[in-house]
Length: 482
View 1: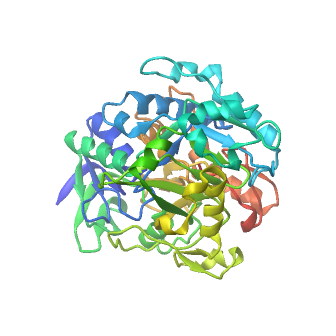
View 2 (view 1 turned 90 degrees about the vertical axis):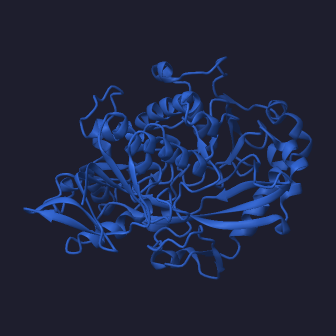
View 3 (view 1 turned 135 degrees about the horizontal axis):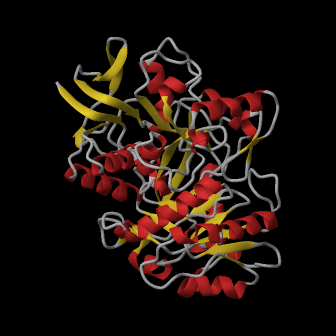
């Protein structure tokens, strides 16, 4: 029977980062995952082409963390090859509203620039060579053309009218990361540090000794013992906790949600024309897009596009691992039906909405025949977008014997950029490292999340981690998950 200092369930962004940090400090670590090879499962959110990396949060905790995370993306021998600092361009579109936000577009731009340029965090920013310009407001189309470079000849109307019919800003100190490649590389590095990975390992029960959890048991009967257990199951957290503690209930402070993305095909020549263009976010609609990325074929490149809507907030991701990432299917159901749905589906017009958004930026790519695939990206949402990093014993239900069981979840769709640093945050929360960043770690506790739910139930507004609001009605919870 194998035994470790830490047994981690889940090989996504949280589990991989924590395993790496623990191993680098000399702990014996095991990672269990449902996937065939033990690395991030194909239906996990980290198993993706790319994720946005930016630091212009309005929340002090995440702003500080993101700036240090970006410094590590730039400097890490393991991760730097997967980080592309092409900048992020934020645009409001002609509507001038902010999706899911109570403020104006101008306020959004002002806050974004302000927090990207905070001098108090300047010491955290490490640059490989020449320091890049700070975020700045876009006042005219000439600035946009300079950012787009040679691609400006292909731009659509969505890039036009800056300072006249729309507003926006550009943050050069941001970009995107190769999600799946980076996660796999970091876990590979952790293995070199001594981490043991258990593939095909669906955990279905705790192992108890003298009333205390001392490990986990897989569906096929294997037992892995650990002095500490870390549950880092992402969108599967609620299901896993309900399985492990069936008599406790389902008030786990996090629930799964699904957003859908699409991938379109480009030729190599087309990709070269759009190379090094920034990530583009339309903060009035939630649409975002990336620059083209290469595939195994030198003649075919892919571009990921997505749009964040209320969508299907609480579907149930499948516990089995099929070996492929989940596609979405079209349905005539409305958002009001979403709460109880378990299907990987979305409104039939969602793909058309995404293509119309793409037509506003790169009109020559907005063709249905270019569609390569669609996929569901699962999130583990909390009410205010703060994560959960806490001992399960601190949950309001006070499950017995769980003092050394930790839950790390509640990514809320904005955790991946922190891959280089989440592990250290866990160590700080567990008091294995000093809280040198002066983070408010209480924001990641079950007590904090219990209070936010109490506020919501009382009809009070809940301040989210990115200046949006979570309201008392499910359909109003349009949170910024970038």
